[in-house]
Length: 459
Ligand code: UD1
Ligand code: CA
Image (cartoon, rainbow, N blue to C red; front, top):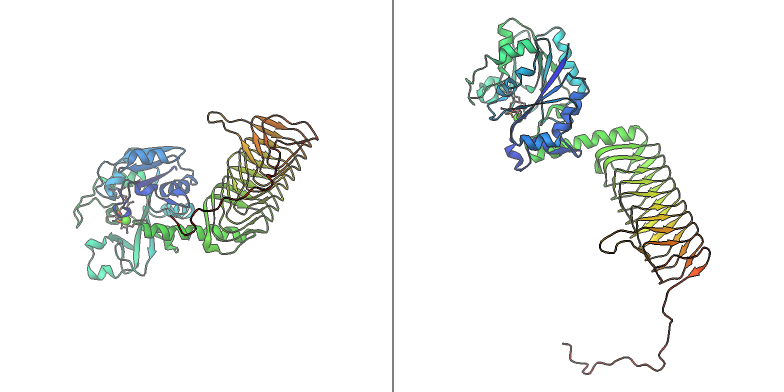
């Protein structure tokens, strides 16, 4: 028995008011359709059928699937019509599961339950109970609670509109049955559409059992039609991430003010203060502290390191017991070895900073390999770019660089060098010596400051 999920993703999503196809709008930094695909992928399906229409090329180009089968639906004539386009993918014995590219929080387990219902039913429907069922297809049951059919809002009688159990849209059935039903669907309804939901009444008419799986958490089956719904599901998704982190031993100053757009793993006793955004793959070691307002992207941070307020760290490897920020910017390709310190208003790019080395204030370090226990004075700049090419700066162990120094690359500051403050260093320096380049200080004795000619004239 092979599983065949088919995901509907052809709709335009008019109410998003966007040039981006609806299913590419994101939850947790990932397109909604990708969430659904990832949930389906865990079912170990034979392949995944994806029905695309509006913005099909954009959708195909933005999504990663192991074994996709893209099916085009040029005109959107209804959910039944959409699934009909994919009949060539269905073998008679396949268990087909219909899912939706704009219902991003659907869980693999729920899809599994729906498929398992086919042990006893010919068709299974995922339903949920809503306080305000307006707009949804209603589940019509007979006196013995057996499902009879689904009636759409626009076709429902006043009595049927009172029913709180609604169709989420997710169904499962065998390929052979679905193919038979789909070929019989007619657009005889208020919207003139081919309703997938008509399959339910057809199954019942054939004497087949239709069973439901009732979804308790209706956010899991909520679709996104506009950006207010997107925001609601985004927060629900983030709350779930926050809960997982807290249960794994992370303290969050406020779980409502955490954003994970990718995958965050964290060790024990990590503390994350408010308003940090984690992007891509981020891992934090034990006892890491993240102060408020940071952005941390595709970075690994080892134990006991602190990232202080308003720092930005991207594609870097950070050792243990390091100190970053406040207001630091660590750019891609940076490696901080253990106990390194990068202080306020310091930018580090594509550089390796040795163990225990400190760049405490107002510096730019780019394309640099720095040894251990180096001290970089405030305002030191590596001049790594001549307008055409980038050059390397090499700084040996135990170097001390005085404040406001320019290191004009390519240049090597040998081990143990001391550089006098205010120097412009253009040549390699010898080990363990003091090197400086600085014009001599002088005093002009008896010099007078200029005085304004007309003190009242302010122009
Ligand atoms: C559908 C169900 C309704 C259910 C509701 C849950 C039908 C007839 N009705 O109604 O019972 O309560 O979902 O949200 O199935 N799509 C296509 N191609 C099409 C039509 C739709 O890809 O030709 C996609 C849409 O982009 C959307 C999804 O299928 O993602 C649902 O379509 P929509 O027209 O919104 O169905 P509803 O009227 O909401
Ligand atoms: Ca809908």
